[in-house]
Each structure stands twice: as structure tokens, then as C-alpha cells.
Length: 434
Image (cartoon, rainbow, N blue to C red; front, side, top):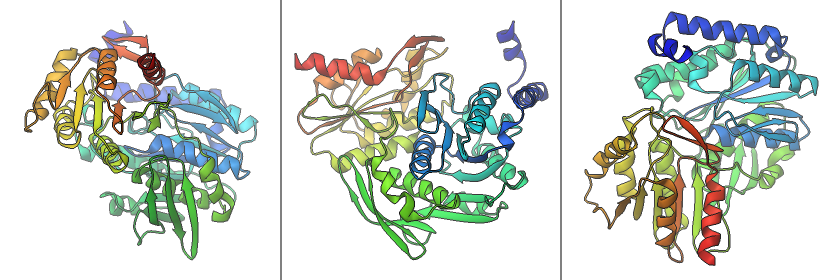
């Protein structure tokens, strides 16, 4: 009955939004409005949210500011961490408020929330007063729900409207943090805040990086802010992760910390499971599992792999069902143009036909001069696709397995099946050694 009602009531109908609001109000009321009793940091954007949320939580805790976190992959209260098994970026209002109340009771000074556009538009943050709001970037995503980029940007902007409307908490000015390199920077900069910080990889922003060294297992750079400069060792790879580190640094300064108080803690960050995660079993090639789903995230991932790979860059990828179909041919074309060879496979199909999804990806591949069974292969079964890619790999190559990351389950045909891609890859690598 519930599924039937969902189908006949539009996703953006007055009835649906009223339901979301009532649910959020009830949850906040039930748990005593904990979102007004702790300093809240909200991070939104298309890519980089999860890494930035985890990184800033690490910096705050290691610097002596006890903090909680609710992210796509992980919940944390201080240094105690729990896996987020909901597969949601922004969890239900009841779970969020339950966690927030625990964080308040355990005297967290800050809570870092990963904020999705869906949750913002659906008012699922009712009763949460934001103190710091950061935007990583905005690129095409979720257009199956938001319909166009204008609506998507509008949904993201709700976080900054909430920041302006939230009650100011003691010793914490309302702070806005924006990526100066993003096209929406000027538009979002117009929102009200007590202080505003920008970040970018080049000089010109409040926080910027220079003297960048990109290694196969880490990134080294100078963190610049005003007249301060600190050499940072970040155990993450890729220029986009340096951008995430700059955002985290701006947030840390927004809480009142000095750069010298948190700079050394970058090097002890263990990363985020399934985000540019290297799988090591002693093999003579690189294997990386990454959650990248959007064309922009994939582009950055491919570029990063090219920088440290001496052999070929090999991909294993697909597209998600029941999601934005417009990015499927874009993904196919990009993979054909940027990868040396790749295996097209199934991601999470949900209720869509797997073959239909692959055909739409292939429409983009066909716009290039790449040849099937030479430059790219089609293996629908994901496990077989991973095996196929690993078997063709030689010394110096890099295999990028994208789409699932650290997800504990995979939705196939509308049903959740157990699927830990990192463990699957480890087992396959171990089996190939025997």
C-alpha cells in the first residue's frame, strides 16, 4: 500500500513535502531539538562531501575539540566510529535527531553533517541550526529528481539560507566557506554570513595551495592563509583531495583553531573507505576502489591515475539504475576517451533493466573511435568484470573499480544483496596469487 501511494503521489507534491516536514518536526520534538544545542557544520556539494566531512571531524577531534559526524559512510561521536549502513548521505530525521541527542549528551562541541540536496529540499533538517556551511562544488547530478541544474543549485542554496536564518551560538560566528574555482561561487557568495572564506588550488583565495607534489600514495603542499604557511603531508592522492583539505582547513579556522594547532593532524588521517582506496595484497600493479559516480568525479579520478601510472589505466565501471539517465552516455564517452582500456559492467540496477542501462552507456562509447573487445569490453556480471580486468593487468598498470566504494550491499533488481567490493577485490587478488 505504501509503495502504491508513493507512485501516485508526485515526488514534489504538496502532500509529499508536508509529510516530510511533519516527519522532521516530530523527530526534532521527540528528541528535544538537539540540533539547536550543539554547533553544527554542514557540508554540501556534488563531489568531495564525504572525504571533507571525515577529514574535518578528524582534525577537530585530534585538536581537542570533541566532535560528532553523520556522513554517507560513517557516524562518529568523538573518536568512536560506527558504519552507516543506511546507504543515505543524509539519514532519516529520526535517526539524525537520535544521533544528535547522543552527541549533545556526550558533550560534543561540534557536529559535522554531510548534507544532500534531496534532504535540503525535503526540509529534513528542520530544527537544525547551522553555524558553518561549506560548498565543495556543483556539477550535474540527481537531475532525475531536480530536473535541471537551476533546480539543483536552488536546492543546494537552502543550506546557506538556513545558515543565515539560524540562531547564532556563543563564540561561533556564522561562517560560509566556498570553492572559488566553482562557477556558482559568485552566486552563493551573496548569501548572508558573519564571515566568508574562499579556497582554491591557486593563489587568490583566502586558503590556497602551492608547491604541490603529487605522489602515488600521498600529496604534499603548502597550505597558505593570510601570512601563514604550513607544509602539509596528506595521505590521500589527487588534486581534488587537496581541494578537500583546503575546505577542511577553512572550516577548522572557522572554529577558532590556529593552523599550527591542526596542520600536523592531516598526516594521521586514515582516509575514507571506498574513496580512492588502494587495495594491496603484494601485487605489482595498483588497484583502487572508488565511489565515483558523476562524470566530474570520474574525470578527476582518471586524471589522477594517469599522473602516477607507468602502465595502462584500466577501468571497471557502470551506471546506476533509476537515476539520472543523461549522464550515462557522457560516462561512456569519457571512459573511452580517457582510459586505456575498460570493462563496462553493471552497477546497482535497482528496478531498471541492466542491459538497457549498458546500452545507454554504449551510446556514448560509440561516439568515439574505440573498438569493442580491444579498447573496451562488456561484461554484465560485476564479479566477472572485476575478474576479467584483474586478469588483463600487467606490472605498472592501475585498475580503477568505480561506483560502489565501501557500500555494504548492492541493489540488483530492486533487492539488496551483500556486496563488499573491497573484500571481493582482495579475495580475487589473493586467488590470482595462488
